[in-house]
Image 1: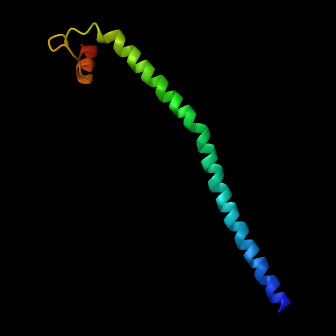
Image 2 (image 1 turned 135 degrees about the vertical axis):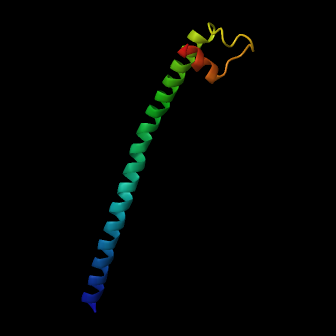
Image 3 (image 1 turned 90 degrees about the horizontal axis):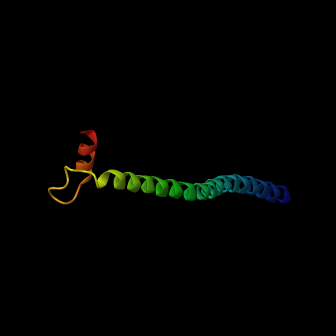
Length: 82
């Protein structure tokens, strides 16, 4: 009886170790993703700043938009390709 209980506890321990290893992997992946979020946000902000800066450089000199008084993205692209 004692041997059976000991064997059952050892099996439960092995199962718990497998579960813990899986959860540890999931936790570490989550934690690592937290480190990339600020970098991605910074890159998006930088790209938006560049986009706005470039639009401002060309936006005021676009003759093709002056009839309506405003430009769409398609208008800007067509004027840049002219």
